Length: 501
Image (cartoon, rainbow, N blue to C red; front, side, top):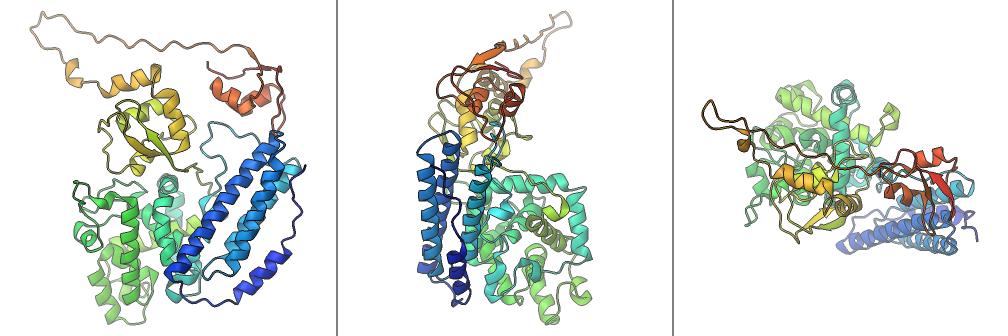
């Protein structure tokens, strides 16, 4: 039974047109809760639809029924969204239409190719397209323009874009990758306040590159770089356990929202001036604004009142936000990360350093230390955590832990490396004392992969690739198996090209 792909969007578009003229009054607490519940329902329906498409590709007879049920749930959400004040019907319809296109592409033999099991992302798209209205500043403090129209795209911002794309490209991509792990903790506060996600990313990129434990020489700390006194004003600081909540991404994001809303209220809702206050001090920003009413940050009488650091900071934040919203225009390929949350319970004592070693970095250039540290800010990297401790992680990290960090050569090497004591390398004694040579660590024995393998019932090309530590795409190419579904059958003999064990 083929999945339904011919649904008409016309009725839903009619509802959208009706919704455009709806009252845009501020949401009540109940409205916000109802809107968040609808967003959650849409996300769950989208997940079920994608899983159903995979099932259809694996010839599961129930896949089509599950796909239809998920689409019906999405339609119900869109209908409910029309009558819910503050709910973005445009966002809901965009998700619905994108998934219909995904189904149509698959039915036409395109898309949903067998993904490399070691790839960092499974179904994640660039964040700027998957978020609910990435420029959701349409409701920013009553202003009806989006982020692009709230800031000036001038030569100073253009220079910032040039710097992010050249000398600082690596910092930008690192910031974007780190942000994907932090997004579920930080973005909801900005979303509820009607502040654009691009602004959050721009500040994060410039302040800390998305490193939760970042600390400046001046004493600013955390992903949003709060000074101690300012942080205390907005609820940050030691929480009674010795942990400074400036390092907590959720708390830091909430404090950042409160700070920006306070500045915007006294600085004529001007993003550039609010950013100047964030960096150059709110007292200075207030004095400059009062002395120059109605003048923008870029007016010479205002601009020259701020120190060089602030004159650099403001356009760099805006430039990062601009690239976040418009990556394709600049040929910018953003890293994709499967940042879905998962719990990792340690089966034996380990530190984040130790986990970083045994997890490896296959498919991820920088490995997983930053992700683990960002998701678990209360732990230092060298803290030896007891067995039974539960860490925030991702499904990929949890799977690699079970595979490589509990037992085996990598687990043993990781334990040995973190327990090493460099002082033991120093030889103490007289001139005739024998030279102590540290015993070499025996190289792990590699088991050669068999040349071929007979497919067992229930196996897929991806599961075989995982079993023998190689890439599904390489196996497919070596055996002439065509996408997008890479169908194999029980008993089929395949060549294990590029497999390790």
